[in-house]
Image (cartoon, rainbow, N blue to C red; front, side):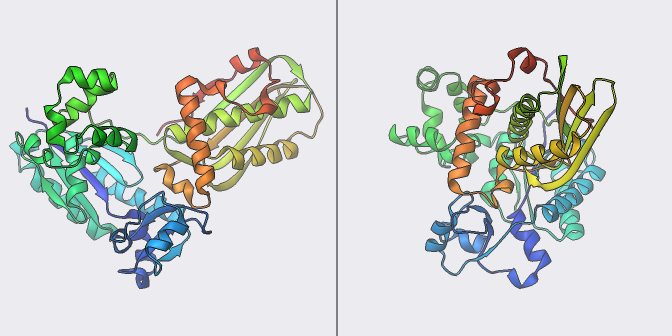
Length: 397
């Protein structure tokens, strides 16, 4: 059976939501991002993109390129509500769908052609989304996720594009190599230096050469250049929380040690959030006394996955919670109220320096392990205690 994989991508999502909330902004050069010139662009309208503005660009540089741009701070709660609305519309109609980010979806419509046509069904679904959400969305369909995503990106906004089975190579051939998903700046620059600028040229490169130059990634590059992608559409499940606990071998009243452990916990769960491209809006601290009495305290927080924000708040909660001065046998941290989305959502109040720092930290942790890079305050945490931090994911819907 021929695969029919649909990719749906909300066009300039943050900008579209802001224009929906304030029609005056429609058609204006609009930047959603940090509140200061040291902040970065989280999203921008198509009117600014023609000047070279793009996401993750420093605000000051964006203003140099487009001085007339209107800058507004992001409202992640509004974006989350809009995303949930679109998700519910898709869930009511699609047999199998994957929500890959706050504004991006894949649907496996394989087998629908025998009834009324997968592409026709996809077009009708897109019309329904636009009508019920009043948000623009683009559609691409092909035999796999890779080609469908590229098609959506090439023809948006308001795209409705079907790449027929057997024409994948022909479609990809003239495109620049940096149009292929997961080919970053470093890889594309390396390919450019080699004289490889189009997918067609990349496809002509011997597989052995690509493996020698890029290792295992060389195989992935060759497959992508040939339009090959067997990855499945992963059924959508909403994760509600992520948490970690530590039960001590010996009960303790050492507040300094307890806070060091909480800091180590926050580092772990925050890294998990960033790895999953999620943000939390609720923080909970839990303690269990030696007599097994268990108490928790939670607070609503601005959407974040940043250590420096969470560390301050978890210490505040612990100070309010621990007032009995009894021995403690367990402490725990839970982050909940999770939303999907790329790291851009958390860029609204970050500076370029902060973002670069977190990217470097996460790269080291991803490559060498979470515990290879920690704050100095956690260096005294007993190794056995670290081993007792049993990371587990919260309830799934």
